[in-house]
Length: 167
Image 1 (cartoon, one colour):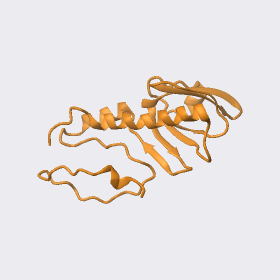
Image 2 (image 1 turned 90 degrees about the vertical axis):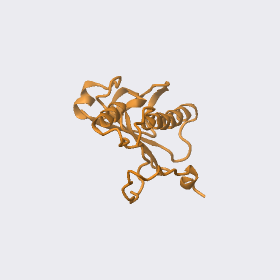
Image 3 (image 1 turned 180 degrees about the vertical axis):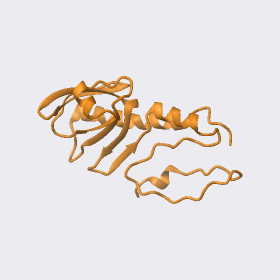
Image 4 (image 1 turned 90 degrees about the horizontal axis):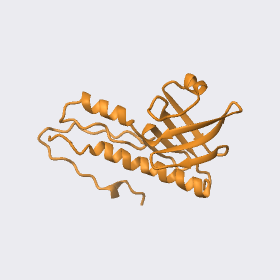
C-alpha cells in the first residue's frame, strides 16, 4: 500500500475538531438547548494549554471538564477556546487549544468523538511502517465492530457515510 503523504488521518481529526468548535460557538451564542452539555477531555501538557499550577499538579496528564450549568466567559477562537470554571469554589480560567482535545462527549444524545492529539498522532505514525495507517478518530462510546484482518492484496474497502446515518 502506498504511503499516505496527505495524512488523511490528521485531516479527518482536524475536521472533526471543527465539530467541537462549532458546538462551542453555538453554546456561546445561544446557550445549551434542551439537556445538552459537554464533557471535554484534554492533554494538560499540550503546548498552549493554560491551567493553574494547582490544577496541573492534580491533573498532570489529562483533565476532563464539564460544561453545563456553571461556566463563564466562554471564548471560542479558530485554534483554541477559553472558559472559566469553579474548582472547589475557586474560580479558574482555562485556555485549551483544539489540538489538545482528546475527547468530546454530549451525554444528552450519546454523541462522542475521540482524538489523538497531534503530537501523539505524529509519534504513532513514526512508529508504524509506512503501509499501516494510524488510527482514525472514532465516535465514543460506540460498540466495537469485529473485522477480519485485511489482506495485502485486497483492494481498499470504501464505506458510504450513508450507512452510518440514522433512518
